[in-house]
Length: 337
Image (cartoon, rainbow, N blue to C red; front, side, top):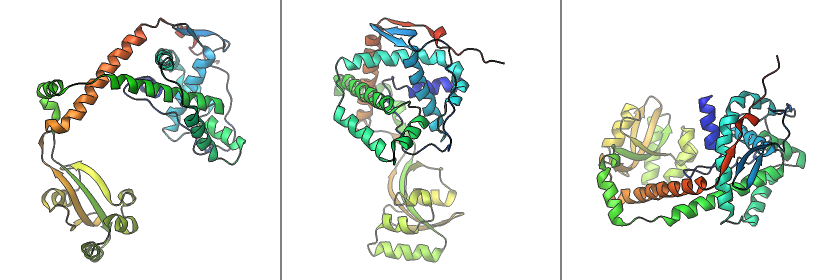
């Protein structure tokens, strides 16, 4: 259950470190029958006040909607459409989730004071989500499968994410750090800026050496590596990316492929055999192990420093809002035997 709590907290979107976009329905739920509606986790009415943030009250109904959407995101991330019947499995997380939800409401309250929603963008987002479905019934079913009770719930979630995201960015943009501060941080934390040997490569996997030799000739004659990879590579994962494998460390690939990557020529197709077949390999970049130069580390340091400063500022602003929490009012009633 601890992992569930962590997941729910992250999905609620209130931390400065990330603002998770709400899950918009893109396909109809896998179930062919409507989700079974179960009784609320508590017997209290939706109007019950479960918390206060500044001058705003938070009702049980509002909390239940947010909790429902958070649970749906956990399920959807595992490829499972949401149904109300799953809520009972997360009952133990309700009290802990209330703490995070009230903080999110505090951040949203602060954000609304300085950021106005872009209604045109919201209209477009909702319209794009709706466009994938043939009728209102199918769209409603998809909304339910992603935890939304209605289109209005989806729009409200999109609006909150938009406003909060803009607010958090505006805070971080206020904090600027000069070259002296960045260099000082770099020198104090030099060990954190070391990296292992790394290479970036792309490949085309085929079944025979003859096929690989033909592809090398085509490339030498001016053939497009990405197009050939997309049409001929037997590696479906990288073929769709034009053969691109990204960057990886020494020792991460099979032995023959690894040796060729880190000892062979740069930007020149070479043929390598492995247990998977024959590879036409092209190494596009190689970086030796060592300390990342200050010029390369500086943007990362500025991002980290501004994020930390913004988080402290945000915590102070949230702390100025009086918050009350009544977790006993959101805890689930005991299951009936």
